[in-house]
Amino acid sequence: MLCHKHESEICVLKNENKRLRKNNRQLRQENKLLKLENKALKNENQNLRNQLTSLKHRKDSSNSSMPPSSDMTKIKRTNSLRKASGKKPGGQVGHKGSTLRIQENPDLTENHFPLACEHCGNSLSDSAANFSGRRQVVDLPEIRQIVTEHRIYSKQCSCGHCTKSAYPDSVKSPVSYGANIQSLVAYMGARQYLPVERMHEFFNEILQVNLSEGGICYLMDKMSKKAEAEHLRIKTAVMQSKVIGADETGANINGENHWYWTFQNPEYTFIGVHKNRGYNAIMDLFGNNFENATLVTDCWPSYFKTNAKNHQMCTAHLQRELIGLSQKYPLQTWTLKFNDMLLRATQLAKQNIQASKNKIHEIHLEFENLLNFKLNPQWTELIAFFKRMIRYQAYLFNFLSDPSIPPDNNASERAIRNVKVKQKVSGFFKSFKGAENYAAIRSCIDTALKQGINPWIKLCEIAAL
Image: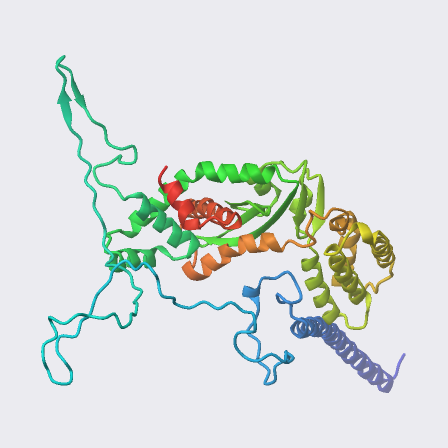
């Protein structure tokens, strides 16, 4: 049997062991919490590093395909980076200026004769007048509406039959707005981007035409219906092209995002609006009508799903993206080499292609070498760009083999930019129908501009239908 002393020591050791076990459990729990906290801090640190990298190499319109409207306000530098051209300020030698000129056949003439001698005061009313000079003032006549009343009559023939005359085809209601007002509503809304409220103010206060906001929307809808045939003709003409440029941009329609699409060539611009940006939108707006055409676009995947005969990627989009990647990954030179290759290829396209076949072959070999390059897998965005070039490599230099294919999609960007300007001025479209009206009328306007036709004259022709 254990003595009392040993029993007390064992009891103390048991208590100590129990206390140590409890402390051990607490330490384990604290260690577990510290590991979780450490992991959370590491994730937070990595997120902050990514945000810092993103802030240092922020994407904007100069180094990516983002529109200029998305650029953040930049702090202006005190010193301009532009170099002096050495030219004097103002108009340069050979520049043809324009100024007000005397018109040989003025609409009105006002003669001003002296009434009395400024020396002695005698009357000069019976004295002969000699012409001494002229000045002209260019102004607008008084702006007011003109109301034309159309009256019809009936006449009875000797045979007893009574014949009544008919109203002109354009006069279909007791009171209506004429073709000039219809054209001006379409012109101010689609060409000059005025919102309905400001158009209402312009017509009522300047033109003295009592036209409500609802009436403006009605006339826009009426002009859109009259433009349907022209809109379809433009679409058909674009479909028959061998080279078609396409682009799309977002649009706010009553608080919801929709998409404007354009399909264009050097003579025609077709614009349509759809609720989404996918392949189905292309099919709904334009159909699968690219089997005889080369489609010039950016790298939006929906375009490559079409049955186009060929494709051409926009080199301008790629160059902006390469600039951004060079800024984000400054330790590599692959993007600089790729960008330099694109610059030389676009410059070569402006020269005589047939006389530069060897240079074209050199560019293709350089492109193949760049696609065989080994990149650091940590450069994730650059790797994504690299894989995209491999996937679409057949669509990069088609402009070198066919001079009718442009190397960039700038024409399509210009064709769709008016939608952004419209939204900046007007805010947004209130209805899908209003957005469709704008697309139809704007297609007619831009096509007229490409063909050297005054858009106002074109709208007047449409309004007279």
